[in-house]
Length: 112
Image (cartoon, rainbow, N blue to C red; front, side):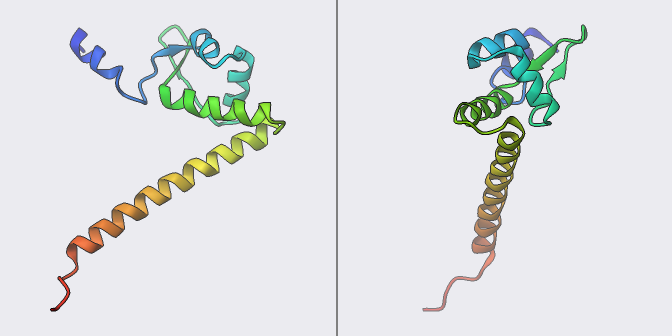
């Protein structure tokens, strides 16, 4: 990968660009909280060659949502389950909209 390629990856929501320390700092939480999210299987960070956790922007958004719920008093396991279900619902709605658009574009025009 060239240097230009790696800079282009920074715009990728799934690119694991953030260390655990930086991610915790950005979220205003602890590294232990991020580990707990991993144990609850909300996020699975990529490991660097040295074994260090790396987080993507998408994972940080999920972690931020988890923090909101936990700060409101929701147990971490329940918060993770809620977020997983919200994410699945959003994906299902996106797919339904795509299928609907595809079906509408294939249907014959109404008769006048």
